[in-house]
Length: 89
Image (cartoon, rainbow, N blue to C red; front, side, top):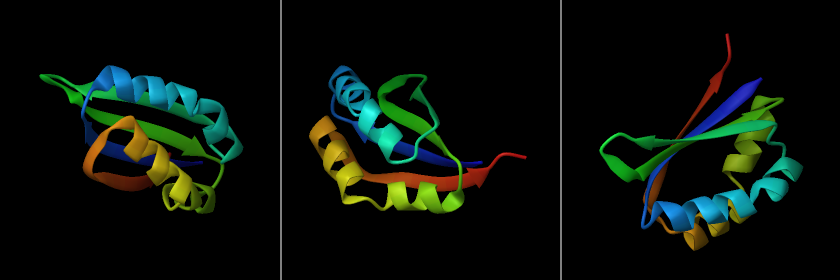
């Protein structure tokens, strides 16, 4: 299993979360098998999310997708997100 971690600032968490939830079914068709969202203590508009995939190739394809960038922009992501990949051990 592979995991994509994404950390970014958002203009407004509630707006971002609605867009994130609305994208759930589409994320699943793009290979996401599990996910979670965390807010930084003391900075509720700094968000870290993880997305699980069956393979690293699927994770990297999702991360590189134009659709993901489009949804993030519409959701109010500010600046360039930090992305990293991991495998569960």
